[in-house]
Length: 199
Image 1 (cartoon, rainbow, N blue to C red):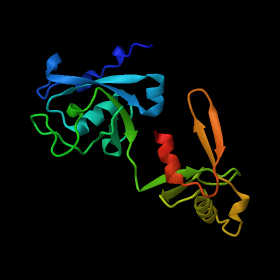
Image 2 (image 1 turned 120 degrees about the vertical axis):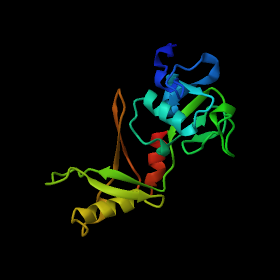
Image 3 (image 1 turned 135 degrees about the vertical axis):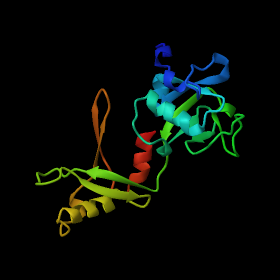
Image 4 (image 1 turned 60 degrees about the horizontal axis):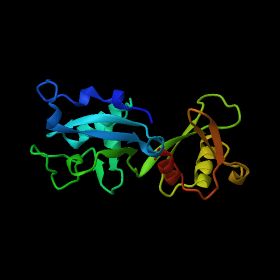
């Protein structure tokens, strides 16, 4: 098993006056980047102080994984528990939560996850050459299916007269080792698919 002690995020272990934090004034957390990171046992250590706000914990987790995204779009979920730590949950000065969950009350291992959203924008690339933009941006909601996305894409490409059943939506998944392609069924919910990918 790989020793992850080099992954400790020093930037999260500084007190408010800029001095290094004392070892007993806080807590160290193992943070995994989603299900894949947990399966591989790959985590980053972050250190939190007693008066750390939950948003700062999420920010430290994003920094540890070099993710430039906004913390309000993410949450930490305790491994082995149902507790979720949202970036907008604030701890008060004595470390107890303001009627919300907190890291102090949870375990030492957490998953970093994207929060569920009501709508997302996806990029759909046409398989035929076309002038202009390389992709069509489509806003999807929880009711959006692969079929409804295809209909919208054809409309934006001025091909609305064509039968959408003659086309299909292909998910392309790129990992560090391979590229996988999967054809989506017409009734597949796109937002559910996105959430599954983000886990």
